[in-house]
Amino acid sequence: MLVTGGSRGIGFGIAKAYIAAGARVAINGRTEESVAAAIEKLGGGDNLFSAPGDIGTVAGCKLAVKTAVDALGGLDILVNSAGIGHGRPIADCDEEMWDLHVDVNLKGTFFTCRAAIPELKKSKGNILNIGSDAGLMGCPGIVVYCASKAGVVNMTKAMAIEIAPDNIRVNCICPGYVDTDMIRRDHIEIKDDPAAAEERMTNYAPIKRLGLPADIAEGVLYLTSDRASFVTGSSLSIDGGTTAGH
Image (cartoon, rainbow, N blue to C red):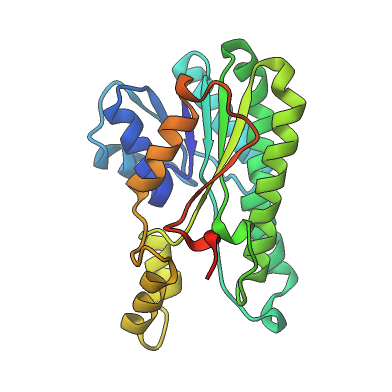
């Protein structure tokens, strides 16, 4: 299997869960150095492979998939976890910010899928895209991020229909706030009062805690397994109840 964005955050947690389950995992990150550091942190071994590439570019998507296929001898599962998320008021959202979010979150997911589909046809494998609760509901201050992740959610549905005849399943998980380095750096530590920012995020979900990468990984393990053989085109919310309403 290949996990994009597997060198950190949710992707790293997913890779960790699969290694624990005995899978052979190709780890993608933007650089060889970041991937090497992740593989070392995961303990190394014969079941881990490096597949670097910038998912914000079509060439990077193709490179990551090709490297993974060459290393693994094929591909049965693709997890698209590479993503970014910056918050700004509408007036401060410029073209560069739009391009960055769309390139990584939406275009990158699409072109990684497209590159992987020929191999997934052979294995009758499946694709798992990481969306967001922000792809299912509006949220002020992150309008561009919401738009990019909503695209991932609906793209998952359309893609699932189109490639179902090829025996490839496509599903999506929509996490809420998850305790990752990106969340802490970009949404907590950057604030004037980090403690208050963390408290707001903790209280956002009815369950009143931040999610953990392991919470998301459990959903990924299910949706990419044979236990979910009749599940495709779905969007599973793992968000502590956030999208149930406030």
